Length: 542
Image (cartoon, rainbow, N blue to C red):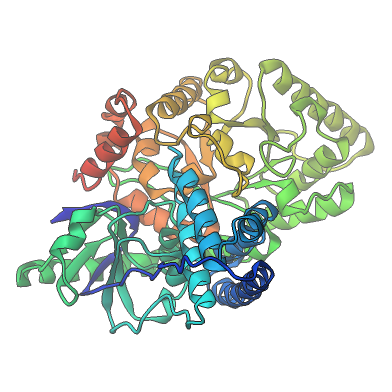
């Protein structure tokens, strides 16, 4: 048995199909005419953008706009002014041909991202490799088919599955995916979860040396395990488990159950909502609540009545489950807690008369700031009462913060905050894909230093009996689930597409097992040790 990282839940059984590596050979002959090379490059970009746009439209129809963004990001990258400028400089000054200039610049960006410790950003290197392979084939005049013809019910095995290949998998009969490398943040893993294809990543380079196309595999995407050449008894056992999981999944999808671990620890599983198109799916997906930045959901609307109508539609869609609304577009761009526009607070307060609304003050850095926000709400309540405007007098006020900022003040804030929503600091602040960040500037979510801060903030809230929720990349990462469950968070706000898979993953986790191991995890010396520890203990059994 080989052990990797669980990336998409479920069990797949089938014959291995090893994807060949993409051809990235480069013709390094100098260009005779730099202007002609520039025209050739620009035509290739136009073709590339057209193909990726068409593929993104297919993905949007199948899974939603957020998944299609995986591909449209590549269009943004290849059209980035700085990247284009570097390629044009090499064409003009160094008289390189288009293939050579493109390859050199994209290799440089790939190295920059691979040099980051942060797993989320490191995974984006796959986009640059994918763009390079696709563009080189266009420049060579070759047809681009990131996936060859696949046999039915095969297990796709690759060193790394590029985003454009992953986007096509739903059109093929794929039983499972195994990646020698990759992370749960990789675009291939995200699409696998959306397509409900079992997947294991980070199986190790040695995996490719012992497997051949046609070898039978069992892939347990929930446990992160791969069985090579299984016995008849193993196949029979896993087929039964797959059938059992299929029945459970069908029941969950028809009547989604409340999320709880194998030993009964409850985790509220809510949705992080970004647009109105997601509202009809909230109930069907079993969302137990929702979290929104109003600037994303309502498009930055500041007119009180229109914002009220927008919030009311969200509240009604949740049918009594809590809706947590934070002013602003994200953690970085939200107003200071004491400076939330009155029209925005009024809209939130009016919407509270139609359901369970909670207000999350963004980026709180002190108890004084939280008190200013509460004072503004209390003044509005008094005004509403005088004007006989309906609202919920018990509306709750909490704080949404990066875990790093929350840790030193969580104990103080917990004295007066009604709840916390934590996210992964810089991850939620928006990262320019083209920004060549220094590795030391980013604190990975799996770095022991970050996990200690996260654990400290959660414990401070729990000691004060304040509910604490996690949102963003932390909540959507299946590999982070054991640690979060062990810490005892109250709930998660994850993308709507992830809820079914997360619910299954939560049901496979033993809370008590991981609670006893949190201290060991945060005492580990490095990010690599943390990942190895979670990977080793992933398939624990009660």
